[in-house]
Amino acid sequence: MTATSSSTSPVKTPKFQPPEDRLTQTLGVLLRRETEARILAPVIAALADRFGTGVLDVVRDTIIEIARTQGAQLAEEYGQNSAAFQETLAFWTANEALEIDLLRDDGRHLDFNVTRCRYAEMYRALGIEELGALLSCNRDGALIEGFNPDATLTRDQTILGGAPCCTFRYDFGG
Image (cartoon, rainbow, N blue to C red; front, side, top):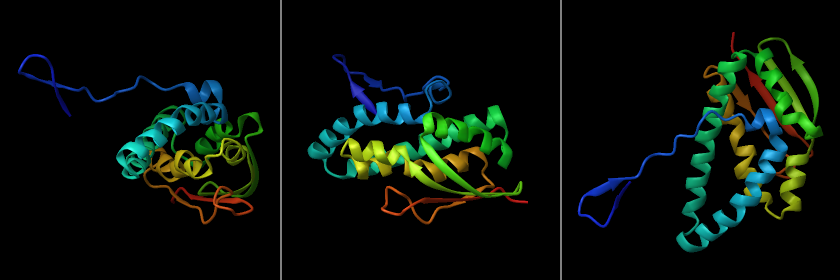
């Protein structure tokens, strides 16, 4: 992106390069997501009103890239296998944010259902359920891509999508 100043030479706008992100480890994800949502929801709504719903595509793509980067940062600190990923789930479950039924954990597969999601409850309470899916549920696939490029996530349903539980089926390969 190029901006012009009062002189005739163009000024290049620097790309945002955030410093190392430790908020998740410090706050837990639930408080972080609520803080982000309270700031982003009115900004996204104003931008969409002004520039159209294409703004949501930009937000979605940006959130996905952020999640991919965060996944890679977690992998650097914890490792890339199923056990390491399961250890990082403590950030998402902190403050009883998620109730999880573990179905399978065999070193390759990590399968669980989320039967209570305080993230969904929070987004509904804020009146931004659809935006909540964009800000939170949308991250999960990209996060695992960043964490381990060989791992896959299959999730057929979410609580925010109206299902009774979220299905998480991770395959970390052989």
